[in-house]
Length: 284
Figure (cartoon, rainbow, N blue to C red):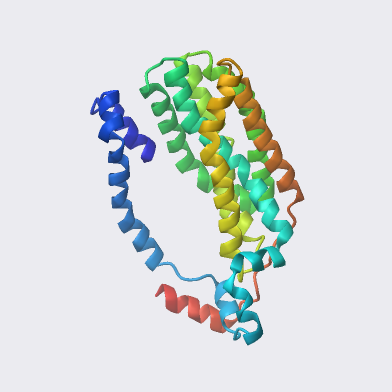
């Protein structure tokens, strides 16, 4: 949706570069306010998981309350290995998505001097495919294992890093579309579809939110810096994209190794009839 709105602003409304830089860039952010109603509806109509409800049944010992004041320390104390592995495994998705989307669009428009609508439309198609692909990838994860599917996504990031940048460098519109669509669909989209289930299983309910937040936020910092890093690498290689491709491939390798080291995480606690009744009451 975000890519589509930017494409509309850039194509249908025909904003000049000056208008886009001055105020046009605010339109997608303002339109996103409409999604708040959807988010609030979903959140208020979603009950807690049976596993979380099961944990709430027994009283929290008084001796453990002081340790809960700093959840991050408790998460590192109880799951140090998984905290690091989740962070490293997440890197490929954040780095590759920002390389393909943010840097890819900038590279086509500035370095290759092509119309901005070309990469925007390519990413719009890639995003539409992602909407349809995510449920299918999730089903494959249920059938063959989330970790295996995530490994394929991390491996895809490594495999498509150099070919995708090579295709972008041809300045051919069909090649640019193929590069954006294939690299996005077989890389970050495949990982993104199974991330919630894979990483949730790595932490107990007492530190799950903290563990997931640490892994995501710190990998997102690296992902957010990716356009700047890619720009610096592009300058260092005299305008050639091979440094950017190597950076993307290394990120994929880091996540590939980390995912290989992930063991089965926390198993759901036994679900009692009382907990099931509580779930029914929440969703009623």
